[in-house]
Image 1 (cartoon, rainbow over the protein chains, first blue to last red):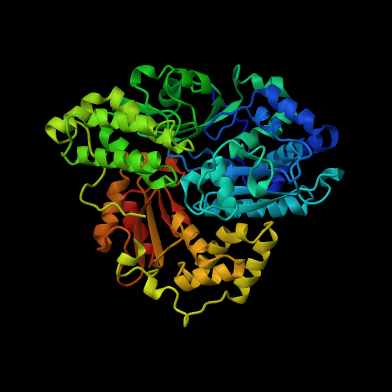
Image 2 (tube, rainbow over the protein chains, first blue to last red):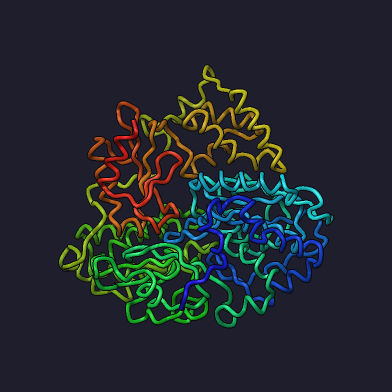
Length: 437
Length: 176
């Protein structure tokens, strides 16, 4: 399969982030078409027909999400762009933000018009993307200067502007209600759903939270139509997709393909295969929360449904490749530590459970493991999964359950031999204190 | 618990100290007024105001917590609750160069811990601490969203990608 250049068509041009480059390529014409020749309902139907699914992690059908927004709600409707990109292994939104910000802005104009947004909206960008925030601010200034943002865009009655809101270092603020809480100036602790944000969200009004890449698909759908979008990929798994490959591969990076390239083809034909010619040990296909896949599962296509059927998920398409030199217990410890750190603390199963999982894995690494630890981890996971208010609890158990099931021998080896399997390496330094937060 | 750490700047007997008052500079005040126009209420302006305060003073000191609270009509407890939730708001002073090493999975398997250990050894600090000359603070951070160019080290606001021990040593030479 050849890489495509739909979402990434501008990123390698000189001055790719400038409005001149974007307009020269036909940019903002699709927003003009949407605002002056289509109704919001028509745009929602178009997006539904395209079978576009959210690219932030949940893969929820975008058109359906938009159709949940009530008309004539008593409070203003809000469009929030989720640029919090904090899922380990994921770095695709950054490419759009830094190198084609106008694609995001145009997508937001069309999406906001479709859902009946009030004249203000926010791009919630993770605080660490300081450069990305400055690129966006500049792009927004350029768009305002040309009248693409502001009052009566393209002579329509639609007023619209965007504010860049920087986060401050919290993975949980990528969860849609965590993001909403954070935008309101609170600790980013997710809310109970229902009510869903489309009914009651930020500042009490209907809210649609969409990932950067999802919004970036919208101008193309308006430009070319639903059938064109469906020509990429397979039914219900449509469209061009940005895949992030990292870890032990020769050519890590962001690659764009029609949805559904196989893991094997991506890693070996496009990313140069495993570093130093080593053997593949495990692949995490969808960011840190996705259950691991074994080398004999890499013929699976990278789309939402096939991976879900195989017991994993496409999630944010952050493909992390682990080779034979990686100690699985060490790798899972690091992920467990991440989730324990990022747990917001509201729910006892997640707050306590993630810390317990990290501490059991830590003991295993230090040679203090016990025979029952692998099953204890599964038991812990069972007490967390489905028992927390948001999906972080479910995410945290993904790597733990999948690694215990698929690499139980490594866990047992740590118990009996008090060290890593021969040939594998512990990357972490056991003697360095883990800085608490 | 905040009270039990002897060097904790927020410890109850030091918070607040009514003799220490702070105020934004004129330029920061202008930026603050602009921030307020972008949000429907004052509370929503809290995160950007705290970022502005950190640019101004380097960390969110107890008197800054009070000041931001007054500006936004929020209690110091509410402001501190937000400060303590988010990783990026510094709860103690940091060095001129805040060296933040990502050690999450993709960076870990490309040897980020080598860089982290090297920094702590070379600068003779424990993780999270600042050098005595106030130049460098070394912390371990979570995924910075640049895994394709791992390992990544963030120095203040800037990302340094495709790092290794040699390049980190060379970078340190330039950061004086």
